Length: 424
Image (cartoon, rainbow, N blue to C red):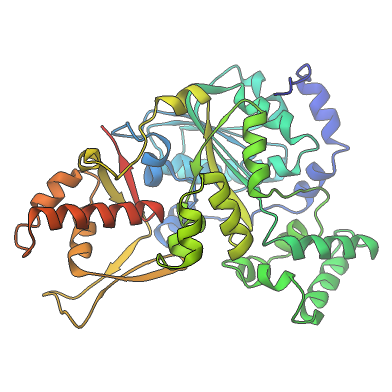
C-alpha cells in the first residue's frame, strides 16, 4: 500500500482548481442535469443506486435499522446531496464538491425542501481531512476516475471512514465503454473542445458510425440513450478532460492496494452467472466454483455488463467480523430476507398451474413456481426463513421438500441480488 503525501492546504487546493481541467468543466457543464423538485422526483420513481434505506443489509447485515448515521458525499454533483438527506432524515449528511455551480443547485434543493440535516461545502476531495470528522457511510460516485491520482483520493476517503463504516464507489468500467474511448481519441485528434459546435459534431458522428462500431454496445445500454439527450452528458461522456476506466481485476487491486477490503457489488445481478447464463449452462457451471473476482471478471468479459462498476468497500477488520452468507447447512434458516426495492413478482391467485409466476428486475426476467412466489411474498424483512417456511402449511409438501425449496430459492435469489439478507 502506498503512503499518501502531505495533505495540501485548502488554499493550495483552491488555487489548483483554477487550473484543473475537471473543475473548469463542471463549472461550465453542470452534471448530472439538475432536478428542480427532489420530493416530486422521488414520488415519480427517481432513485440513487446506493440508497442506504433500500440497501441497508448490503452494507451492515447485522444492523436492524439504518438511521442516525454520519454520511459523507464526496463529489455530490447537483442532486445526490438532497436525495440522500431526504431519504435519511435522522442522519447527518455532509456534501462536498469542487464545482460551485453544482453546489449552488444542491443549496437550492436544501433550501427548497428545508433539509436541516444537510451541510453543503465547497471542498476538494483531497482535503476531506480538513472537515475534522469521520463517517459511517461515504458515497463517491463518478469522482475518483476523474482525479490525476485516484489512489491518493481513495486514501483520503479511507482516512475519514470509521472502523465499521462502509464506502460506496462508482467507477467507469472498461468493457462496455471501450467504444467510448475510441471516440474520445478520435475527437481529440479532431481538435474538439467543449463548445456547442463541438457537441453538434459529436452528435453527427454518432449518427454516422457504421453498425459494427463497438460504441453501439454502450449506446444501446440501459439509460444511455435517455441521458445522451443532454449536452452535459455528451460532454461528460465523449469530451471529458480527464477520465479512466477499470477492469474487474483493476477494481480489486485498487481497493486492496489502498488498504481497504472489497465488501461486495452494490447489485449482484450483473455478476451472476445464473442470471447471465442459464443455471444448467456449461459456462455457469464452470465459473460457479471460482472466487468472486474471477467470476465477476469472466461475466464482465463475456456479457459486457459494466459501463460502470458500483461496489462497496470497508476496512479489512470490519469485513472479517461479518457473517458469511451460506446456504449449505441449516444456519440460513435464521437469515432475514427482504426483496430488492425494485423486484417485481407477478402471479395469479388462486394459483393457476398453467400460468407460472414471473420474477422481474432490471433486465432480468425468469419464471418461478407458485411456492417460490409465496416464499418471496413472505420475505418482508421481518420474518426469518424458518418463520417463512412455517407459513407454507397449506402447501402439499413435506418438511424436507420445503427445506429443499427454500435452500434452492434463497440461494439463487441471493446470487442474483434479488433478495437481501440480514443475519442477527
